[in-house]
Image (cartoon, rainbow, N blue to C red; front, side, top):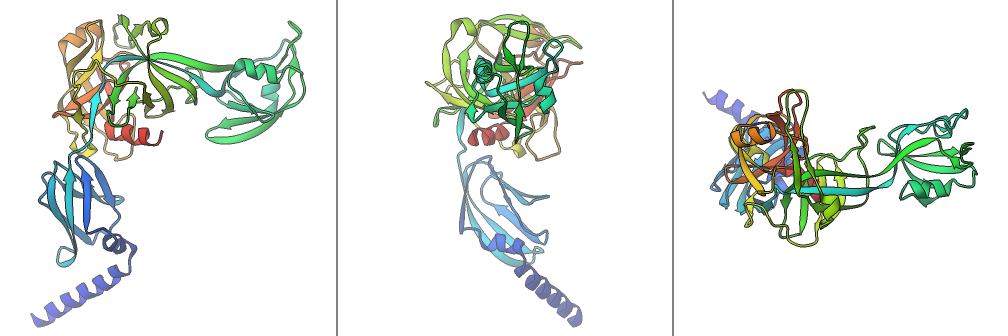
Length: 410
């Protein structure tokens, strides 16, 4: 028995020495004496699989492993401790845990309109000028490219682009393609039909549509909506924001969804022009901006706590949305499936509408409901993003922490 214990001690000593030299153990030694976490927040500590962590005291705090290391998820507010050990035997470090109440967000559900001009113009197609081939196509400019500058002058719209090319001289264009800036020299061609010099490209410089407000942050005045990007309908290119606004929208018509044909919400926000805030960012996880005044009209004006990814589970939930003049309604749904990936995604969960009132009114999920907040266990867990075309009672949702992370980068 003595030899066996000596071998074990030597093995542990060798493992400890090896780990002491590893960057994974360095991550443990560099931790502060106390960690302060927001309820529902997730923190990843890059430690070796040989390091075992035990979280105690603060209700609901869990320490689990993923591909990045140790995934620490804060539960409810309270205090506790996080103990690290080598193989669960040799103590390494103890850190005090303090979990404070998570941020409160006011969930939306209000129907809103989004209108914006693009930063630059989006090429949606090339066109020959009579018998003359498209100069844009000959230069290598493609559908989906964003023309940002002509001869160093930033382009704010189609009219400005035409003005910059009006003399017919060869121009240098800066184009954004797949996130990369490229430059092209293009010589406009004279259109014999009206004598104007043209690029030979169809472009788009603005867009507008109906969606749903997801959240309003009373501390910062920030808001998020849609849960997915506004993209060009022809090219699928994410439209960069030049100038944009969020408007109050009155739902004037509901076209119900049916299998194979998603319905939609129609509104009159372009007539009302009641501006709620400025849109500053459009990304794959939604549109974000800052409200001119507190956004009201929802069902939870005092706010609700935010759920972390690990707090979301399959089962009963509800969604907040507007389908008539009655304002925001809360409707039963269920979370059918959660994505196995911890990576941000606009389709992180599968949802099913179960409320007979909403099914009767809209057939399930329709276009314009994107951004409708999802509530579970008294927390905001995410938002509706897409409808399943062949079964409109089903759809996809995004986690609220993904939207908040995107809002923080806006």
